[in-house]
Length: 80
Ligand code: FES
Image (cartoon, rainbow, N blue to C red; front, side, top):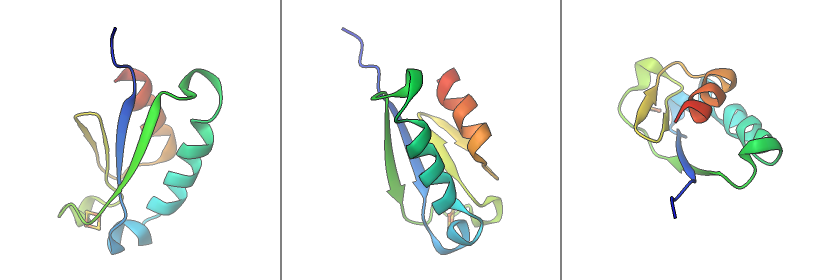
């Protein structure tokens, strides 16, 4: 059996927070409670990942998303 849950790491450091990472996390969590993603995503908050110039930073599986927005992350989750 294949483990099918996608891991998403959202930076919650100060620069990413200022750039809207909290809002992204909230929107992603809402989106992941319905449709095909329901039960297939696990979200983690992280401390600063030392890439503050590209804030907000989100990691989906093994892919770094710089200057992330909700739409970009959703596409990446579906691809991963
Ligand atoms: S605050 Fe997110 S990378 Fe530094």
